[in-house]
Image (cartoon, rainbow, N blue to C red; front, top):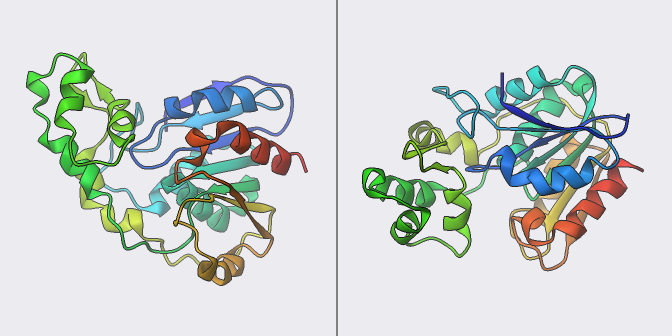
Length: 246
């Protein structure tokens, strides 16, 4: 069973949040707390991340199955990036588990970019020699601005170990950047919310998306990139709250 962090809110349909690659439930703490002003919120650590169990596989069928185990009643589901793909597969394979679906800055397609850069950067760090996050930061080179700080949220300094199953994530990278050949449709209300400055959700992918999610609506947050919830949290929260409350 996945590790979960729960935020009590008024009685209502709960919201489940699934984070992206290299993330954790703690990354969503502020947003989850604000969203819990109107409903209970459950945030998970995905497998091979955070405090959740490590496995030898990391397919979206696996991730969707993990989410299904957490859901004991129909829930609204929000997933970002990798978590968004897992949420889509959950909705397509177990639609009775999902009421409304929010997919943040990802599409049901295979991407050509890899996320091996951060993995290679983490592997280069001599964990035995570090005594502070500053030591680790100094060794996390060659990454885009903001990525080292994000990765370091998953470093446990006390035991000098990553809270990420790096070897399995590397071995399964083709599955992570891909999307499985899932059949069927999810007919429930679905919002594809993307960053206006991100290139992860392309207009040419809409036919594929609508074939799987006929009720899909699309919206952008101006000025936000792929980490739209971190870059424009207030706008992100407002869009999600308006959609879930419609």
